[in-house]
Length: 328
Image (cartoon, rainbow, N blue to C red):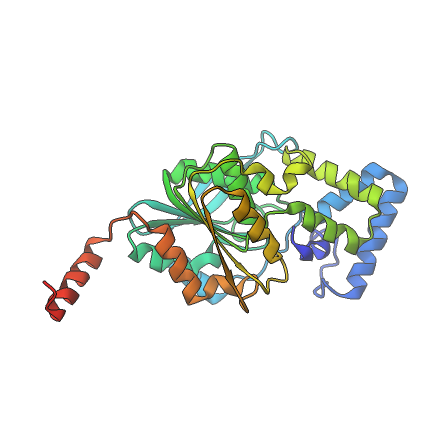
């Protein structure tokens, strides 16, 4: 659902040896296939466009993520999908937990994985929180080929129900939009919500996708209407700040001004729509490197752990430090 989605043909739609998914050849093939589908019927073209838009690519898990997961306890959660096109379907979602204490939930974005936010795990555990992460359907270790925003929101709701109550949520990109939708549904009760590079205006991603695959205004409108129906929302609600309403829970938005995938304006608009929000702008970190920046991690952990008692080991170290300084 990001600007790269146009190249996200399903495995069955691309040749097995296709690797240059952003090449001009792939783009020409994508546009030609879509035009052929629309030539058969508007419904077929709209269905194919929706499939392209909602089919993520899977990326190889880097070693740093494997190390984070190896230190956690793996389990699985049954998620019931509730959107109109998925009602009655279930997904077995891979999940991991670290530490003890009040729960902080990590929510990844489009084409991401739970451990993509792995840089937050150890600092949050040291701050006294138990950390839970999961891989959404069609991502990471969870099966599937397609994902709607509503599916990700269903995951947030059901994972929160299984591991909650939640003290904090840390979400990235499309994961932030899903958390907003989960809040609107009453499925999340976290007091502290940190949203990094939030994708808050899904209609923007739709517009970019439509331009790059060559949809005219009429076809784009039909596609947008179909996508809204599949997510169980109105077209207007595809700008998720419309779902926010009045939220008393605290929100921290961190967004990079140089983000080329989700413009900084998304973070600005989400923070403006939330009644108890703070916005922190960074520069030079982009859309994903921001998740590994030490200053960003420290700020998010301090925000998320507010009101949480430090673990006994941390208290002992603090007492030792004060004794060594003659402060006690």
